[in-house]
Amino acid sequence: MHGFLASSIGVTCAAALALPLTPPAVAATTARPVPTTEAATTARPAPHAGTPDTTMADRRAAEPYAPGSTQSLPLEPLTRNRATPTGPGTPEQGLTRRAVRHFSLVGIVWDDPETQLHGRVQVRTRAAGTGTWSGWQDVETHNADHAADRGTPESTSGRVRGATAPLWVGDSDGVELRVRSEPESAEADSAHHGTGARNLPAALPLPSGLRLELVDPGEDAVPPGAFADGPRTAGLAAETSAATEASAANADLAPLGATEIPALNRAQTEQEYLALNTGELTEQQRARPYVGPRPRIVTRRGWGANEGLRERGFRYTKKVKAAFVHHTASGNNYRCSQSPSLIRSIYRYHVKSMGWRDIGYNFVIDKCGKIYEGRAGGVAKPVLGAHTLGFNSNSMGIAVLGSYGDKKPSSAAVKAIARLSAWKLGLYRMNPRGKTYLTSGGSNLYRKGKKVRLNVISGHRDGFVTECPGRKLYGKLGSARSKAAHYQGR
Image (tube, rainbow, N blue to C red; front, side, top):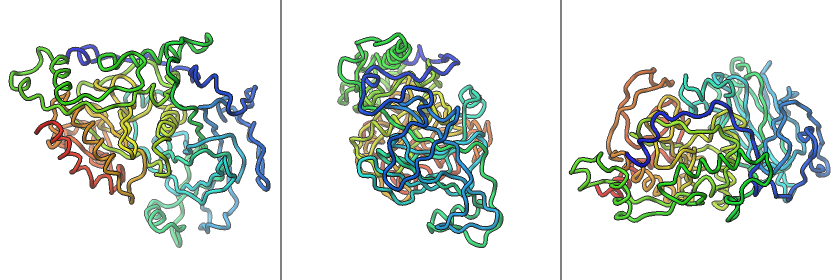
Protein backbone atom coordinates (compact mmCIF):
# COMPACT_ATOMS: atom_id res chain seq x y z
CA MET A 1 0.00 0.00 0.00
CA HIS A 2 1.93 3.00 -1.28
CA GLY A 3 1.83 5.90 1.14
CA PHE A 4 1.89 3.95 4.36
CA LEU A 5 2.90 0.33 3.75
CA ALA A 6 5.79 0.43 1.33
CA SER A 7 7.91 2.53 3.67
CA SER A 8 7.02 0.57 6.77
CA ILE A 9 7.97 -3.03 6.14
CA GLY A 10 11.20 -4.07 7.82
CA VAL A 11 11.69 -0.83 9.71
CA THR A 12 13.42 -1.38 13.04
CA CYS A 13 13.89 0.76 16.10
CA ALA A 14 16.84 1.92 18.10
CA ALA A 15 17.87 -0.59 20.73
CA ALA A 16 18.03 1.72 23.72
CA LEU A 17 15.11 2.84 25.82
CA ALA A 18 14.71 6.62 25.71
CA LEU A 19 15.10 8.46 28.99
CA PRO A 20 11.84 9.17 30.87
CA LEU A 21 11.75 12.88 30.18
CA THR A 22 8.86 15.13 31.07
CA PRO A 23 7.05 16.98 28.24
CA PRO A 24 7.09 20.79 28.27
CA ALA A 25 3.50 21.17 29.42
CA VAL A 26 4.06 18.82 32.34
CA ALA A 27 7.36 20.35 33.35
CA ALA A 28 5.66 23.67 33.88
CA THR A 29 3.07 22.22 36.27
CA THR A 30 3.45 23.06 39.95
CA ALA A 31 0.16 21.70 41.27
CA ARG A 32 1.98 19.28 43.61
CA PRO A 33 5.23 19.74 45.56
CA VAL A 34 8.33 18.39 43.86
CA PRO A 35 11.09 16.93 46.05
CA THR A 36 14.51 18.24 45.12
CA THR A 37 16.68 15.18 45.83
CA GLU A 38 17.04 11.65 44.54
CA ALA A 39 15.52 10.55 47.87
CA ALA A 40 12.20 11.77 46.53
CA THR A 41 10.79 8.29 46.95
CA THR A 42 10.55 8.85 50.68
CA ALA A 43 9.05 12.33 50.48
CA ARG A 44 5.32 12.01 51.05
CA PRO A 45 2.44 14.22 52.09
CA ALA A 46 1.82 14.46 55.81
CA PRO A 47 -0.26 11.43 56.79
CA HIS A 48 -3.82 11.71 57.97
CA ALA A 49 -4.40 11.21 61.67
CA GLY A 50 -3.89 7.61 62.72
CA THR A 51 -1.94 6.61 59.61
CA PRO A 52 1.62 5.25 60.04
CA ASP A 53 4.17 7.15 57.95
CA THR A 54 6.60 4.43 56.91
CA THR A 55 9.81 5.42 55.13
CA MET A 56 11.22 2.96 52.59
CA ALA A 57 14.50 3.86 50.87
CA ASP A 58 15.50 1.76 47.87
CA ARG A 59 17.70 2.41 44.88
CA ARG A 60 14.90 1.25 42.54
CA ALA A 61 12.10 2.80 44.58
CA ALA A 62 10.88 5.45 42.15
CA GLU A 63 11.60 8.26 39.79
CA PRO A 64 12.10 11.70 41.35
CA TYR A 65 8.61 13.07 41.80
CA ALA A 66 6.96 14.92 38.95
CA PRO A 67 3.39 14.84 37.68
CA GLY A 68 3.72 11.63 35.71
CA SER A 69 5.99 9.30 37.71
CA THR A 70 6.11 5.89 39.37
CA GLN A 71 6.72 4.88 42.97
CA SER A 72 8.09 1.33 43.16
CA LEU A 73 7.99 -0.18 46.66
CA PRO A 74 9.41 -3.62 47.58
CA LEU A 75 6.97 -5.84 49.43
CA GLU A 76 7.62 -7.02 52.97
CA PRO A 77 6.68 -10.23 54.80
CA LEU A 78 3.40 -9.81 56.64
CA THR A 79 2.43 -11.23 59.98
CA ARG A 80 -0.67 -13.40 59.82
CA ASN A 81 -3.55 -11.23 58.67
CA ARG A 82 -6.24 -11.20 61.30
CA ALA A 83 -8.99 -10.54 58.72
CA THR A 84 -7.92 -13.29 56.31
CA PRO A 85 -7.19 -16.76 57.72
CA THR A 86 -4.34 -18.60 56.04
CA GLY A 87 -3.10 -22.17 56.15
CA PRO A 88 0.14 -23.20 57.86
CA GLY A 89 3.18 -21.86 56.04
CA THR A 90 1.18 -19.78 53.54
CA PRO A 91 3.52 -17.19 52.01
CA GLU A 92 2.14 -13.71 52.45
CA GLN A 93 3.72 -10.40 51.56
CA GLY A 94 2.49 -6.85 51.29
CA LEU A 95 2.68 -3.38 52.74
CA THR A 96 1.08 -2.07 55.89
CA ARG A 97 -1.11 1.01 55.65
CA ARG A 98 0.96 4.07 54.84
CA ALA A 99 0.95 7.51 53.29
CA VAL A 100 2.60 7.89 49.88
CA ARG A 101 2.78 10.45 47.10
CA HIS A 102 -0.20 10.92 44.82
CA PHE A 103 -0.99 8.05 42.44
CA SER A 104 -4.02 6.79 40.50
CA LEU A 105 -3.14 3.29 39.29
CA VAL A 106 -1.58 0.28 41.02
CA GLY A 107 0.04 -2.95 39.87
CA ILE A 108 2.45 -5.60 41.15
CA VAL A 109 5.64 -6.61 39.30
CA TRP A 110 8.29 -9.27 39.92
CA ASP A 111 11.62 -10.31 38.49
CA ASP A 112 10.92 -13.23 36.14
CA PRO A 113 8.28 -12.67 33.42
CA GLU A 114 7.99 -16.47 32.93
CA THR A 115 6.92 -16.98 36.56
CA GLN A 116 3.23 -16.78 37.43
CA LEU A 117 1.78 -15.38 40.62
CA HIS A 118 -0.55 -18.08 41.93
CA GLY A 119 -2.59 -16.39 44.58
CA ARG A 120 -4.62 -13.38 45.48
CA VAL A 121 -3.64 -9.71 45.42
CA GLN A 122 -5.78 -7.20 47.30
CA VAL A 123 -5.27 -3.49 47.78
CA ARG A 124 -7.05 -0.64 49.47
CA THR A 125 -6.31 3.00 48.93
CA ARG A 126 -6.97 6.39 50.50
CA ALA A 127 -8.72 9.02 48.39
CA ALA A 128 -6.55 12.14 48.20
CA GLY A 129 -9.47 14.54 48.36
CA THR A 130 -11.35 13.10 51.35
CA GLY A 131 -8.91 10.88 53.24
CA THR A 132 -11.46 8.03 52.99
CA TRP A 133 -10.12 4.50 52.70
CA SER A 134 -11.63 2.16 50.13
CA GLY A 135 -12.58 -1.42 50.82
CA TRP A 136 -10.29 -4.22 49.69
CA GLN A 137 -10.13 -4.54 45.90
CA ASP A 138 -8.83 -7.54 43.95
CA VAL A 139 -6.07 -7.06 41.38
CA GLU A 140 -6.15 -9.41 38.38
CA THR A 141 -3.04 -11.60 38.70
CA HIS A 142 -3.06 -13.43 35.34
CA ASN A 143 -1.44 -10.99 32.93
CA ALA A 144 1.29 -13.03 31.19
CA ASP A 145 -0.93 -13.47 28.13
CA HIS A 146 -0.54 -9.78 27.28
CA ALA A 147 3.04 -9.69 26.04
CA ALA A 148 5.43 -9.51 23.11
CA ASP A 149 5.97 -12.83 21.34
CA ARG A 150 8.77 -14.97 22.75
CA GLY A 151 12.13 -14.56 21.06
CA THR A 152 11.43 -11.06 19.75
CA PRO A 153 13.76 -8.15 20.62
CA GLU A 154 11.06 -6.70 22.89
CA SER A 155 10.69 -9.88 24.94
CA THR A 156 14.45 -10.55 25.19
CA SER A 157 15.54 -7.00 26.09
CA GLY A 158 16.37 -7.97 29.67
CA ARG A 159 14.00 -5.30 31.00
CA VAL A 160 10.75 -7.31 30.95
CA ARG A 161 9.17 -8.28 34.28
CA GLY A 162 6.25 -10.38 35.38
CA ALA A 163 3.23 -8.31 36.34
CA THR A 164 -0.40 -8.26 37.36
CA ALA A 165 -2.96 -6.30 35.41
CA PRO A 166 -3.13 -2.64 36.46
CA LEU A 167 -5.99 -1.38 38.62
CA TRP A 168 -7.32 2.18 38.38
CA VAL A 169 -8.10 3.60 41.84
CA GLY A 170 -8.31 7.36 41.17
CA ASP A 171 -6.31 10.11 42.86
CA SER A 172 -4.98 8.56 46.06
CA ASP A 173 -2.29 9.25 48.65
CA GLY A 174 -2.35 6.17 50.87
CA VAL A 175 -2.11 2.44 50.28
CA GLU A 176 -2.25 -0.96 51.98
CA LEU A 177 -1.50 -4.21 50.17
CA ARG A 178 -1.62 -7.93 50.80
CA VAL A 179 -0.42 -10.70 48.46
CA ARG A 180 -1.19 -14.24 49.52
CA SER A 181 -0.04 -17.35 47.70
CA GLU A 182 -2.56 -20.11 47.02
CA PRO A 183 -2.53 -23.45 45.21
CA GLU A 184 -3.65 -23.12 41.59
CA SER A 185 -6.88 -24.96 42.37
CA ALA A 186 -7.79 -22.36 44.98
CA GLU A 187 -7.57 -19.31 42.73
CA ALA A 188 -10.85 -19.79 40.90
CA ASP A 189 -12.70 -20.57 44.14
CA SER A 190 -11.24 -17.49 45.80
CA ALA A 191 -12.14 -15.27 42.86
CA HIS A 192 -15.71 -16.56 42.66
CA HIS A 193 -16.54 -16.68 46.34
CA GLY A 194 -14.50 -13.76 47.65
CA THR A 195 -13.15 -15.83 50.57
CA GLY A 196 -9.85 -17.32 51.52
CA ALA A 197 -9.07 -20.91 50.64
CA ARG A 198 -9.71 -23.54 53.37
CA ASN A 199 -8.31 -27.03 53.90
CA LEU A 200 -6.10 -26.76 50.83
CA PRO A 201 -2.64 -28.17 50.08
CA ALA A 202 0.44 -26.06 50.64
CA ALA A 203 0.52 -22.85 48.66
CA LEU A 204 3.06 -22.23 45.92
CA PRO A 205 5.96 -19.83 46.56
CA LEU A 206 5.44 -16.23 45.59
CA PRO A 207 7.62 -14.88 42.76
CA SER A 208 10.88 -13.20 43.76
CA GLY A 209 11.30 -9.45 43.65
CA LEU A 210 7.68 -8.48 44.28
CA ARG A 211 7.13 -4.72 44.14
CA LEU A 212 4.11 -2.46 44.32
CA GLU A 213 3.95 0.06 41.47
CA LEU A 214 2.06 3.29 42.17
CA VAL A 215 1.57 5.29 38.98
CA ASP A 216 0.81 9.00 38.78
CA PRO A 217 -0.55 9.63 35.25
CA GLY A 218 0.56 13.26 35.10
CA GLU A 219 -1.38 16.14 33.71
CA ASP A 220 -3.92 16.17 30.89
CA ALA A 221 -3.16 16.61 27.21
CA VAL A 222 -0.60 19.14 25.98
CA PRO A 223 -2.24 22.57 25.52
CA PRO A 224 -2.68 24.00 22.00
CA GLY A 225 0.54 25.37 20.55
CA ALA A 226 2.85 23.53 22.94
CA PHE A 227 3.96 21.07 20.25
CA ALA A 228 5.40 23.84 18.12
CA ASP A 229 7.12 25.63 21.02
CA GLY A 230 10.18 23.41 20.87
CA PRO A 231 12.19 22.24 23.90
CA ARG A 232 12.08 24.48 26.99
CA THR A 233 15.43 23.06 28.14
CA ALA A 234 18.21 21.10 26.51
CA GLY A 235 17.10 18.00 28.40
CA LEU A 236 13.74 17.99 26.61
CA ALA A 237 15.19 17.75 23.10
CA ALA A 238 14.82 13.97 22.95
CA GLU A 239 11.19 14.11 24.09
CA THR A 240 10.37 16.76 21.49
CA SER A 241 12.06 14.73 18.75
CA ALA A 242 10.19 11.59 19.78
CA ALA A 243 6.89 13.51 19.80
CA THR A 244 7.56 14.73 16.27
CA GLU A 245 8.41 11.18 15.20
CA ALA A 246 5.16 9.79 16.64
CA SER A 247 3.04 12.49 15.05
CA ALA A 248 4.79 12.21 11.68
CA ALA A 249 3.79 8.52 11.52
CA ASN A 250 0.23 9.76 10.88
CA ALA A 251 1.24 12.43 8.36
CA ASP A 252 -0.96 10.94 5.62
CA LEU A 253 -4.02 11.34 7.84
CA ALA A 254 -3.58 14.49 9.93
CA PRO A 255 -1.32 17.54 10.26
CA LEU A 256 1.85 17.31 12.34
CA GLY A 257 1.01 17.80 16.00
CA ALA A 258 -2.71 17.02 15.62
CA THR A 259 -4.54 15.89 18.74
CA GLU A 260 -7.02 13.86 16.71
CA ILE A 261 -7.40 12.22 13.33
CA PRO A 262 -10.78 13.37 12.03
CA ALA A 263 -13.56 11.05 10.94
CA LEU A 264 -14.31 10.67 7.24
CA ASN A 265 -17.54 9.64 5.56
CA ARG A 266 -17.66 6.56 3.34
CA ALA A 267 -16.99 8.42 0.07
CA GLN A 268 -14.02 10.31 1.55
CA THR A 269 -12.59 7.12 3.05
CA GLU A 270 -12.88 5.24 -0.24
CA GLN A 271 -11.14 8.07 -2.08
CA GLU A 272 -8.29 8.03 0.47
CA TYR A 273 -8.08 4.23 0.29
CA LEU A 274 -7.86 4.21 -3.51
CA ALA A 275 -5.20 6.92 -3.47
CA LEU A 276 -3.08 5.00 -0.94
CA ASN A 277 -3.38 1.78 -2.95
CA THR A 278 -2.69 3.05 -6.45
CA GLY A 279 -1.56 0.18 -8.64
CA GLU A 280 -2.13 -2.50 -5.97
CA LEU A 281 -5.84 -3.21 -6.44
CA THR A 282 -7.69 -5.32 -8.96
CA GLU A 283 -10.43 -3.72 -10.98
CA GLN A 284 -13.03 -5.46 -8.83
CA GLN A 285 -11.38 -4.23 -5.62
CA ARG A 286 -11.37 -0.69 -6.95
CA ALA A 287 -15.07 -0.97 -7.76
CA ARG A 288 -15.95 -2.45 -4.33
CA PRO A 289 -13.36 -1.28 -1.77
CA TYR A 290 -15.18 -2.72 1.27
CA VAL A 291 -13.58 -0.31 3.69
CA GLY A 292 -15.54 1.25 6.54
CA PRO A 293 -15.66 5.01 7.09
CA ARG A 294 -12.65 6.19 9.06
CA PRO A 295 -13.64 6.91 12.67
CA ARG A 296 -12.36 9.78 14.77
CA ILE A 297 -9.20 8.72 16.61
CA VAL A 298 -7.53 10.64 19.45
CA THR A 299 -3.78 10.67 18.78
CA ARG A 300 -1.07 10.00 21.31
CA ARG A 301 -0.56 13.73 21.62
CA GLY A 302 -4.29 14.05 22.23
CA TRP A 303 -4.14 11.81 25.32
CA GLY A 304 -0.89 13.33 26.50
CA ALA A 305 1.67 10.57 25.86
CA ASN A 306 5.14 11.37 27.14
CA GLU A 307 7.05 10.18 24.08
CA GLY A 308 10.32 10.21 26.02
CA LEU A 309 9.21 7.08 27.88
CA ARG A 310 9.03 4.67 24.96
CA GLU A 311 11.78 3.16 22.86
CA ARG A 312 12.54 5.25 19.79
CA GLY A 313 11.61 4.09 16.31
CA PHE A 314 8.86 1.69 15.35
CA ARG A 315 8.48 -1.98 14.51
CA TYR A 316 6.02 -3.23 11.90
CA THR A 317 4.55 -6.53 10.84
CA LYS A 318 3.61 -7.30 7.21
CA LYS A 319 -0.15 -6.74 7.28
CA VAL A 320 -3.22 -6.75 9.51
CA LYS A 321 -5.21 -9.95 9.04
CA ALA A 322 -7.01 -10.03 12.38
CA ALA A 323 -8.10 -7.88 15.30
CA PHE A 324 -7.85 -9.25 18.85
CA VAL A 325 -10.23 -7.65 21.33
CA HIS A 326 -9.13 -7.23 24.97
CA HIS A 327 -10.21 -5.62 28.18
CA THR A 328 -7.61 -3.88 30.33
CA ALA A 329 -8.94 -5.56 33.53
CA SER A 330 -8.29 -2.23 35.27
CA GLY A 331 -11.75 -1.90 36.79
CA ASN A 332 -14.77 0.14 35.74
CA ASN A 333 -14.54 2.96 38.29
CA TYR A 334 -13.44 5.64 35.88
CA ARG A 335 -15.22 8.53 34.21
CA CYS A 336 -14.81 9.01 30.47
CA SER A 337 -13.17 12.36 31.19
CA GLN A 338 -10.47 10.36 33.01
CA SER A 339 -9.75 8.08 30.05
CA PRO A 340 -6.62 9.99 28.93
CA SER A 341 -5.22 9.74 32.47
CA LEU A 342 -5.99 6.03 32.61
CA ILE A 343 -4.31 5.44 29.25
CA ARG A 344 -1.24 7.42 30.33
CA SER A 345 -1.10 5.29 33.47
CA ILE A 346 -1.30 2.01 31.55
CA TYR A 347 1.32 3.29 29.09
CA ARG A 348 3.68 4.17 31.94
CA TYR A 349 2.99 0.83 33.66
CA HIS A 350 3.70 -1.13 30.46
CA VAL A 351 6.96 0.72 29.80
CA LYS A 352 8.44 1.69 33.18
CA SER A 353 7.12 -1.15 35.33
CA MET A 354 6.80 -4.10 32.92
CA GLY A 355 9.72 -3.18 30.65
CA TRP A 356 7.94 -3.07 27.29
CA ARG A 357 9.03 -0.73 24.49
CA ASP A 358 5.65 1.06 24.39
CA ILE A 359 2.05 0.52 25.41
CA GLY A 360 1.07 -2.98 24.30
CA TYR A 361 -2.25 -2.28 22.55
CA ASN A 362 -2.59 -0.76 19.09
CA PHE A 363 -5.84 0.98 20.03
CA VAL A 364 -7.77 1.74 23.20
CA ILE A 365 -11.52 2.37 23.49
CA ASP A 366 -13.27 3.80 26.53
CA LYS A 367 -16.79 3.02 27.73
CA CYS A 368 -18.13 6.12 25.98
CA GLY A 369 -16.93 4.76 22.65
CA LYS A 370 -14.02 7.15 22.11
CA ILE A 371 -11.12 5.61 20.16
CA TYR A 372 -7.49 6.34 21.06
CA GLU A 373 -4.24 5.62 19.26
CA GLY A 374 -2.17 3.10 21.23
CA ARG A 375 1.32 1.94 20.29
CA ALA A 376 3.16 4.54 18.22
CA GLY A 377 3.91 4.04 14.53
CA GLY A 378 0.82 5.22 12.66
CA VAL A 379 -2.82 4.21 13.08
CA ALA A 380 -3.14 3.04 9.45
CA LYS A 381 0.11 1.05 9.48
CA PRO A 382 0.69 -2.56 10.60
CA VAL A 383 2.37 -1.69 13.90
CA LEU A 384 3.66 -4.71 15.83
CA GLY A 385 2.08 -4.72 19.27
CA ALA A 386 2.46 -6.69 22.51
CA HIS A 387 -1.13 -7.65 23.20
CA THR A 388 -1.70 -11.34 22.38
CA LEU A 389 1.23 -13.59 23.24
CA GLY A 390 1.88 -15.80 20.21
CA PHE A 391 -0.25 -13.82 17.76
CA ASN A 392 1.10 -10.28 17.62
CA SER A 393 2.36 -10.66 14.05
CA ASN A 394 -0.10 -9.66 11.31
CA SER A 395 -2.72 -8.58 13.84
CA MET A 396 -3.79 -5.60 15.88
CA GLY A 397 -4.91 -5.35 19.50
CA ILE A 398 -7.98 -3.34 20.55
CA ALA A 399 -8.41 -2.91 24.31
CA VAL A 400 -11.57 -1.65 25.97
CA LEU A 401 -10.85 0.19 29.22
CA GLY A 402 -12.46 -1.71 32.08
CA SER A 403 -13.23 -5.22 33.34
CA TYR A 404 -15.93 -7.18 31.55
CA GLY A 405 -16.11 -10.57 33.21
CA ASP A 406 -19.36 -9.78 34.97
CA LYS A 407 -20.21 -6.33 33.61
CA LYS A 408 -21.64 -5.78 30.13
CA PRO A 409 -19.67 -3.46 27.88
CA SER A 410 -21.50 -0.33 26.76
CA SER A 411 -23.17 -0.34 23.36
CA ALA A 412 -20.97 2.66 22.51
CA ALA A 413 -17.81 0.62 23.13
CA VAL A 414 -19.05 -2.32 21.02
CA LYS A 415 -19.99 0.05 18.21
CA ALA A 416 -16.53 1.63 18.39
CA ILE A 417 -14.90 -1.81 18.07
CA ALA A 418 -16.98 -2.38 14.94
CA ARG A 419 -16.25 1.03 13.40
CA LEU A 420 -12.51 0.82 14.06
CA SER A 421 -12.29 -2.76 12.77
CA ALA A 422 -14.33 -1.98 9.64
CA TRP A 423 -11.88 0.77 8.73
CA LYS A 424 -8.53 -0.74 9.72
CA LEU A 425 -9.29 -4.28 8.52
CA GLY A 426 -10.77 -2.80 5.33
CA LEU A 427 -7.43 -1.14 4.59
CA TYR A 428 -5.97 -4.63 4.41
CA ARG A 429 -8.93 -6.09 2.50
CA MET A 430 -10.16 -8.29 5.36
CA ASN A 431 -13.80 -9.28 5.91
CA PRO A 432 -14.78 -8.78 9.60
CA ARG A 433 -17.20 -11.73 9.37
CA GLY A 434 -14.61 -13.98 7.81
CA LYS A 435 -11.88 -16.37 8.95
CA THR A 436 -8.12 -16.11 8.54
CA TYR A 437 -4.97 -18.06 9.33
CA LEU A 438 -2.23 -16.82 11.65
CA THR A 439 0.99 -18.64 12.52
CA SER A 440 1.43 -19.06 16.26
CA GLY A 441 4.55 -17.66 17.86
CA GLY A 442 3.93 -20.01 20.79
CA SER A 443 1.28 -19.75 23.50
CA ASN A 444 -0.30 -21.97 26.15
CA LEU A 445 -2.94 -22.94 23.59
CA TYR A 446 -0.98 -23.38 20.34
CA ARG A 447 2.58 -24.55 19.74
CA LYS A 448 5.00 -22.30 17.91
CA GLY A 449 4.71 -22.58 14.13
CA LYS A 450 1.17 -23.96 14.07
CA LYS A 451 -1.16 -22.35 11.54
CA VAL A 452 -4.34 -21.46 13.38
CA ARG A 453 -7.70 -20.66 11.82
CA LEU A 454 -9.27 -17.72 13.64
CA ASN A 455 -12.10 -15.25 13.27
CA VAL A 456 -10.90 -12.03 11.67
CA ILE A 457 -12.30 -10.32 14.78
CA SER A 458 -11.29 -12.59 17.66
CA GLY A 459 -11.19 -12.34 21.42
CA HIS A 460 -7.89 -12.64 23.23
CA ARG A 461 -8.99 -16.03 24.62
CA ASP A 462 -9.14 -17.43 21.07
CA GLY A 463 -5.33 -17.41 20.92
CA PHE A 464 -4.46 -18.00 24.58
CA VAL A 465 -6.06 -19.67 27.60
CA THR A 466 -7.22 -16.55 29.43
CA GLU A 467 -10.36 -14.86 30.70
CA CYS A 468 -9.62 -11.79 28.53
CA PRO A 469 -11.59 -9.96 27.16
CA GLY A 470 -14.03 -11.01 29.85
CA ARG A 471 -17.10 -13.19 29.38
CA LYS A 472 -19.50 -10.30 28.80
CA LEU A 473 -17.36 -8.53 26.19
CA TYR A 474 -16.50 -11.79 24.44
CA GLY A 475 -20.22 -12.43 24.06
CA LYS A 476 -20.58 -9.17 22.10
CA LEU A 477 -18.01 -10.01 19.42
CA GLY A 478 -20.59 -11.57 17.11
CA SER A 479 -22.46 -8.27 17.11
CA ALA A 480 -19.21 -6.38 16.48
CA ARG A 481 -18.43 -8.60 13.47
CA SER A 482 -21.86 -8.03 11.93
CA LYS A 483 -21.73 -4.28 12.50
CA ALA A 484 -18.22 -4.03 11.07
CA ALA A 485 -19.20 -5.93 7.92
CA HIS A 486 -22.20 -3.61 7.53
CA TYR A 487 -19.95 -0.56 7.85
CA GLN A 488 -17.79 -2.02 5.07
CA GLY A 489 -20.84 -2.29 2.83
CA ARG A 490 -20.94 -6.09 2.83
